[in-house]
Length: 313
Image 1 (tube, one colour):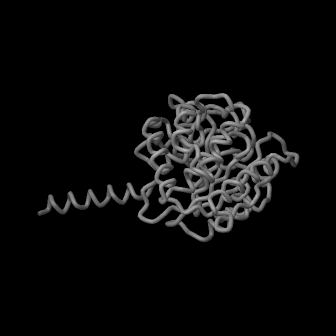
Image 2 (cartoon, rainbow, N blue to C red; image 1 turned 90 degrees about the vertical axis):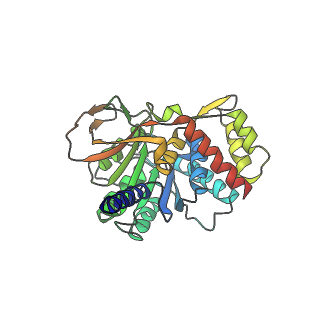
Image 3 (cartoon, rainbow, N blue to C red; image 1 turned 120 degrees about the horizontal axis):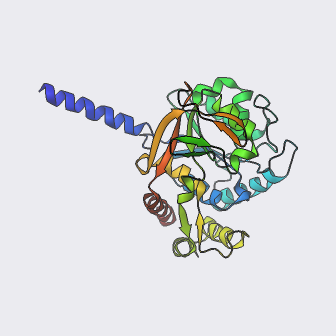
C-alpha cells in the first residue's frame, strides 16, 4: 500500500510538472510581439499561436527592425501586416493589436514607451505569479524590455521568450539580427530577474523549415489567412522563388507549446557587453532557460497538424 501511495504521488508530481509548461490545464495567456514585415516566418508563427487552443492570445504587437535610436517606419510596416492577419482571421475586433516602439532603446535603463509596452504591462497585472503572461518576442525585444523598465512590478508576473542570440556547445554567442536590433533591450532582460526562455539563432532555430510544396498542399486556395500566408511567400523578395524557407520564429512557438519537442537547459545568463561581445558566466546566479536542441520533424508535423485542424474548423 505504501508503494502504491508513493507511486501515485510521483505520478501526480510528474503530471503537475508537465502541465506547468506548454500543457497547461487552462490556456496560457500570451502576447506575440513581432517584426512581421521583416520576414515571412513571423506570419506563420503568429498564426500558429493564434490557432493554438493551449493559448489565449491577449495581444499581437508590432516591433521595429532597424538598429537605430531614431524614430523609423519599420514598426508601422509590421503593424500593417499584423492587422491584415487579424482581419483575415476575423479577430481584429477581439484581440488588441497596438503598435510598438519605433526605435531601439538608447540604454538599458531608457525604455521606449509605446501602446504595445503599455499593453504588456496591463495584461501582466491581469494575472499573477500563478497565472503569468507569456510574451513572445519574434523581433527586437524593445517592447518587452521597455515594459519591464516602465513598470518593474510586472517582473514576477511575466515570462519572456525571445529568439536570437546564439547558444551552442554550452556557450553563448552574439545574435545575428533581433539581438543586434536592440542590444540594450537584450541587456535589460538578461540583467533582470524575469523568467526567461531563449531560442538560439542560428544554432537551433535555423534547423526548422517548411517547403513551398507543402505550403501549397495545405494552404493554397483555402481562403482568408491561409491564402495570405501563401501570398506572403510568393511576393516577399527573399522567398518568391524559394522552394524551402527557414521558419526561425515557428521554432520558438513550437518549443513552448510542445516541451517534448525541445531540449531545454537552465544555465547562467551571459554578460552582454555589446552587440558582438558576449562573456560566458556559467555560475551567474541569474538563471535562464535555453533550448539547446529541437525535434525538427516533430515540430513540422505538429505545425501542419494544428494548421490542418484550424482549416477544418
